Amino acid sequence: MADRRQAKSPYTEDRLIPGAFEGETITRRRFMVGSVNAAGIAATVAFTLPALGFALGPIFHRNRISWQDVGPLSDFPDTTYVPRVVTLTPDIGEVGKSTAYIRKHNPAIDGPPKDQYDNYVAISTKCMHLGCPVRYIEASQRFVCPCHGGVYDFQGKRTGGPPVRPLDRFYTREVNGRLQLGPRFSVNSELRRFSPRDPGEPLDGIGQYLYPRRFDTTNKPAGAKN
Amino acid sequence: MPKLPAPPVPDALKPKPKRPGEGNGKEKPHEVAAEAGIHAADWVDERTSVSGGLRWVLFRKVPKGTNWFYTLGSATLFAFLSQAVTGVFLAMYYDPSPIHAYESARYITNDVFLGQFVRGMHKWGATVMVILIFLHMGRTFFFGAYKYPRELNWVIGVVLLVLTLVMALTGYLLPFDQRSYWATIVADNINGTGPLVGPYLADFLRAGPEFGATTLSRFYAIHMLLVPGALIALIGAHLWLVAKLGTTAPPWLKVEPPEDLRKAEV
Image (cartoon, rainbow over all chains, first blue to last red; front, side, top):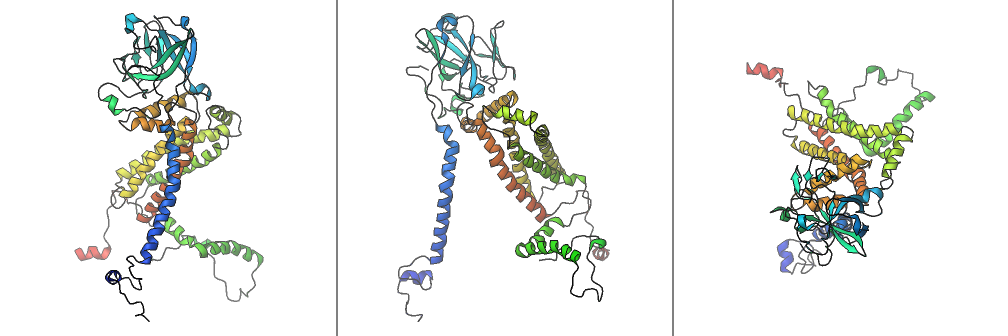
């Protein structure tokens, strides 16, 4: 009986697989273990990867450019700032709102405008230390942060405290005699424009490479220069 | 397997053997009732062998010289249980949406029966738990209880510490008042300052480039589903290792060699 399926194949002889068919190179036990493990891994990956993508999705979701009206052009002088409430995230009530300080571009202070989005300067109130809300103090022409004492000058450049770069700004454009605010952008100490970064991330020297552009930041409007 | 010690029940509570001629096969009703509980426990034990495990955990040998400092671990465990229970019940009234969160927290405090008390327990209990963890960690460190063979338990303990701090951070946002909102903004931006990965980590925590509609629900899910699950699993591993490796003697306790060995030395 035992000799009926005598091993004729060199494979089975070499690999000591009892009762193997001709050409069989792997034991059925090993094959079973391997396929069960593979099935288990496939099943685990099948629910883990979608869940992970679901949680990480917002990082890769690019937000659209939106413009919001902040009032007639005549509201904004070029020697002081006018505060305006802006909506950063719609549909979540007060939490999604913030304040922007807006003035007309002043060539004596700012030099020539960079492009058509620079005729009005809109400063974000997000402190560039850790994101607390700064306030403009008219008497000293300074922006001051209540949390850790960051101080910025009239242009929003850092003059004291822990912040690592000037205050962020918004693109502005004039439409039918009214001013509109667009996406936020970050600037380095020479006011060169960068895509919006989080507070605490310096943009001078190596900082611009250590804190790269994120996937989910809004594109800059057409024709905007750095 | 070595014989496990019998539970230390006082003599008065141990069942007495029946006197000759007393048991004639008929049990009185109160005896049947008394047996019912034992039968139920036996029924479970026969199918699970749970009593052996319980005795393994509860009736361990403890070295001489253990003192009140050794209770800090259990104190931390009870602080966690208190957080778990109060947290589950707070979730019955809490609404993790940016529009309603503050109002629902206010409703818990002002309108729900015992709401202020339960919310207060959860709020202050969080601080108590962090303090107890550090005291427990200090005891382990100064008593040298992290040394071989207990290094892995120290590592698990450190992970538990980090997870507890994650709980403290994510729970801080949930009342959704000015303080929790700005504290979360600051904490998220601190995450963002990590080179290269920081900006993406901050985006992940916020669910987008700005504090958005789902940031709060994301923190809520991390706070009450993701981290508690990991905490419970790791606390189980921590306790299993404690039971397996035993309690360390305090460092000032010297090992006394057995009497016959001491005589042999002389």
